[in-house]
Image (tube, rainbow, N blue to C red):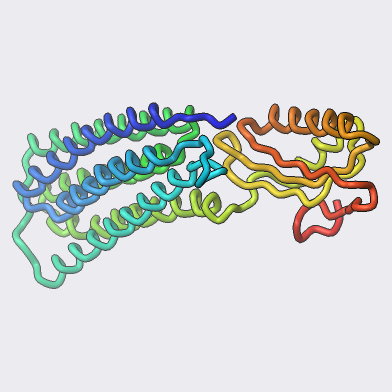
Length: 300
């Protein structure tokens, strides 16, 4: 049976949305007062944090694991789509940061002015970002939500960005004005890496990449008494969140009732190992025996 974690996901996203708006406004105000390019870029990055929360709320609203007539396999891919949207926002933030840094190098600008009280405000921002990161990741891992885990990765990039910006502004305070522009480039690289990580982790789900090694499914099926052969095994989804398994099975049975009992035992053992999972088993006659465990495989 599928696990519906949407209520928990929405609660976490709403809490972090308000915290991210607070962080964004604080960075923007301090950035405007000091004239810091790296801090204004960081504020822009924080805008994407809030946008990601809103996107996550929308995705979660439509990502029910329960099937219906139009979506017989459920709606969980909406969460993966939402996570890819986060990746896109990260890419936009990366471009904006680089553009601002290049413009400052080419056209120059007013010197950055920073004071100790403004640095203390940035430490408050850093503390809030760290809390949001670990809170989202903890709940995301606990309930198996890719949207929360992806957003936590995004916020973690914001933590490193803020640390870099604070370090640069301390340098500016000590008289090294060039640090503000120089740090904008590694900040952009950190943002890009976060975008790539989120994309890499969620794209396989959308393209139905294998979820479970067919050899493992094959071994579990053959461990059931009465199973003669198991072949053409396929799986997709995410283990621990929702997985789907299909296979062709040959059983030692002369009647439907016995065949059904054997296949139910196979389903039971697979569910115990990969729950929640939906399993489709095609029972075939002995002449359909095959050594092709999975598609593209010719032997076990």
